[in-house]
Length: 436
Image 1 (tube, rainbow, N blue to C red):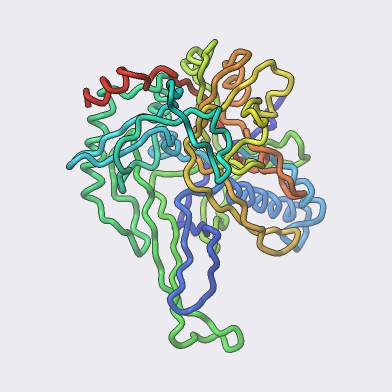
Image 2 (image 1 turned 120 degrees about the vertical axis):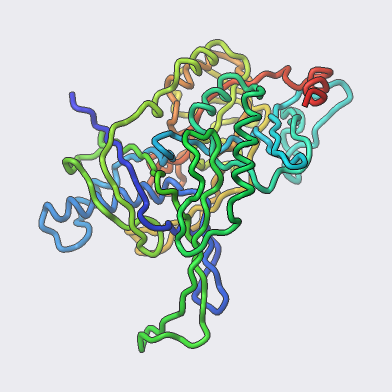
């Protein structure tokens, strides 16, 4: 039986404008800011639009979407995007890695929840001090985070980090090399310049530079420039050897996939262009054996978000109850129960978009950013099942709206790994800190 899944390379041909949800109008001195990563909704929406246009052309429609095509493309499930650079997959750096400045070097610590000892406590989360009796405060981060820190970690190093949760001397030299290159790079890139770092197969990648352009407002009546009204737009500049990988699942739709798909289509804001082409799946979608072995029978596991996630309780997954226990809904009847012990979650990420159905902007959603890490204790069952069933699958909650489900847009793709509850207890933590 022929597979109902297709995989696409998305290679931006121009800087990609990805609005971050802040209000913007063409007023003097205004600036349209861009996000640092491509959100899944941009990829999913663009892919559905591209396929809808292809189907409309085949059926002889003059509009971009016929009603039939609109219904079919809405059923298309998309996974991704996953960044690739020089043919190597990369993931957002997990937030349980803490980079700090140490003189002319960049050092890294690991963050691990530590069970409170006798006489110790935790004030809880939020203004009401929620979960103070259940969460374990994190240890390991020392000093202020570095202003210049890696944004992406190669899949090879990510797999090692997920399977061991150990920082070794092997990290030091590549990190020193990365930081030496970073300090030689210009702080700002304008005018569409490309990524200037030329290292091959590096474990670390910096945040992509921004392209800032100045525009003049146009009078809608006369179509001439409006005097004195200049504003800026910001866009993300992808390296020449970088592309995004996405998966399209056709099993719920009746779409006739275009054979040998290769097309140039707008991507992001201001109709910037990208090339879409069909490709092979690659190994990145399958859980490595080393992770399965590490998780088999483990007592403490981590869930790392490879893409932003939507949870009904804000930073807290909706599939956890008031005691912080539960399992991802996609696990179905599997006999496994997890208890949350800590989470490394940065500030929420705004996600918006455009509704073709309503012909208006979508409301801003607050998403948990990619790279966020959730630490669990396994109360019952074998966590190996999580990696077997949910490796790079969505752990997002169901969308409360009638629009597309976030799960079908690629939000909340999860990676799984282990952690050691004893890693930062008593004298062991002191010995590790003194050895640095």
